[in-house]
Image (cartoon, rainbow, N blue to C red; front, side):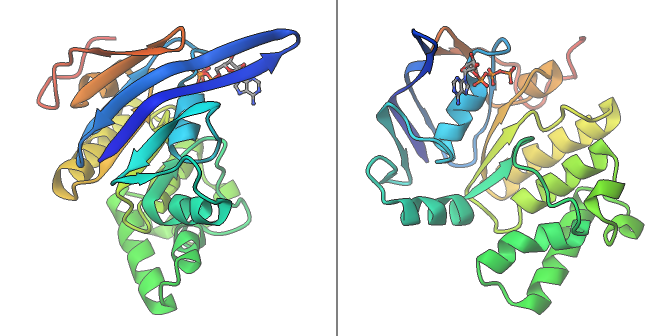
Length: 235
Ligand SMILES: Nc1ncnc2c1ncn2[C@@H]1O[C@H](COP(=O)(O)OP(=O)(O)OP(=O)(O)O)[C@@H](O)[C@H]1O
């Protein structure tokens, strides 16, 4: 369960102050698949960074399973990021010189998972995102954008986080791979009770989430959705 309380993030831009997140409050129950939509520059990535403790709010708080991030010491915030959150962020790059398998094993190593368990679990995760087994040992910089995106999702799942934050998870993918990723996220939230929040411009994805929010002029509003059973929307 995640509770966002009157979150504000301002930036100085020359002598102007911009407020991409200006009093945002919402709650998400465990296992919810939710999306945030909004125009480019509306503050979606800023909001996601605040939820993942990659950035600190100007004011307000994020409470995850009853634990408040405001005032949490940096060491604890690092622990929160590593243990509780799976990131699928474009700027949160994979390590280009390591293999797909090594990239997925890395967060498990930080979390102290035994080596034999790491490799087995990483292989299973790469299978789940349907990366060709021939490519498990291939270096990241020799994989296509879509393949890298799948590795990033497998890596986000490595420590079985309670919350996954994904910035444009279908952004680089062809329609069919994108559909597969949507189905994967949907089954993760339903079967593993993982809360997933995606920022997306992909209408098919946004329409298939349980809840959809729009960020506009610093404020978040909820919009009705067709839900997971819906047919893909015409784009
Ligand atoms: N570190 C920063 N310093 C100053 N301004 C910033 C910073 N990060 C973001 N901004 C500004 O805040 C606003 C929101 O940016 P953000 O990246 O959150 O938008 P977005 O909705 O994710 O956009 P897109 O859909 O294009 O990815 C933009 O005007 C951006 O220039």
